[in-house]
Image 1 (cartoon, rainbow, N blue to C red):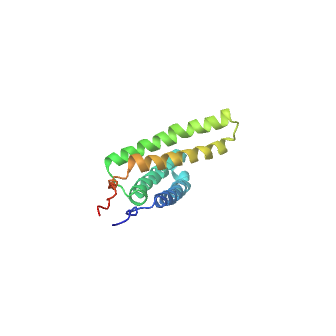
Image 2: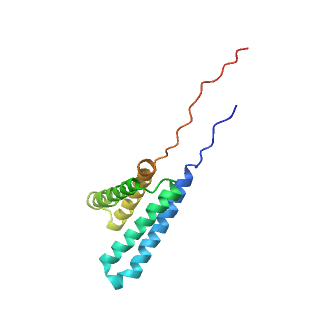
Image 3: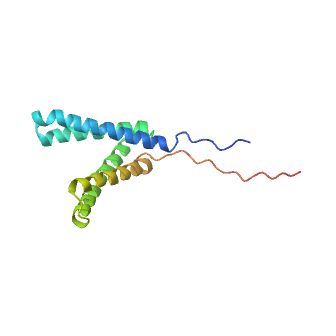
Length: 146
């Protein structure tokens, strides 16, 4: 009789990789922006830096954190997740923090980043790159017939 099979990926491993990828993504985004904002201007530099960071994030999260495919479907789900979390959820959290709770805008922005980070992780894990392994079927215990 064999015991339960250990998961191929412990639950904490994707979280740690997701956080590390997020840090690297931020370095890419801010670093490119710092290098490009003077020669290109703020808006073009921001477009290049955020697009580069998001491209890195898509590939790294897909391959390293969640072990999923990089397909048109996952790219569209990834983009939709980021649109919702960055351009819908974050403004709601920021405005709620500032207007209703009286928070400083930067503090509200930090809360919004936290909310979008959690939203992105859950969305990536369960929507963009869901775990497609079949759960192990439980067999009823065998009764001793002796």
